[in-house]
Length: 188
Image (cartoon, rainbow, N blue to C red; front, side, top):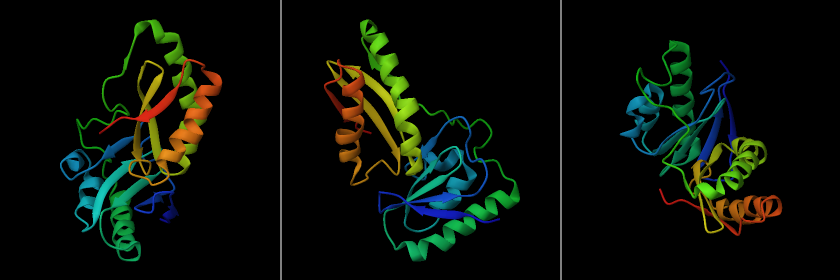
């Protein structure tokens, strides 16, 4: 088994590509060992000293570090991922939730058409690009011209995430949806 690695815009996060499906049909973010209880692989990754976050995309795993250097962490992470796939263990334990959600959405029912347009733009133009960088961005709400987004994986805590939101996503949404005045991340 050959696992590729890629740098992400977030220097604290590295993207691992195992060359097979990871979590088709959604994403899953675990920000601590308690949240990792639903995934055997995430539990193993959190047992590596310095790992502070694990995110599963359709065909990739991003790992975030709180401490340590990648040259020391990377071999242990690669070994854990390889062992997991060679053992044929499930990614998410029986009964473990892996929905891409992240909380309830909020918006005024009168804005439903605008929200549908925003969600379509996010799904078709933003999320594929963000997934390339090892993360995900999902719609959380729309109120008084402000779009609220949940940033996950390498996007969470990324130094360039503000630029991505303001220069990228906000400009795109404002161009296609005149009702949008601003884009903000939700506090998690």
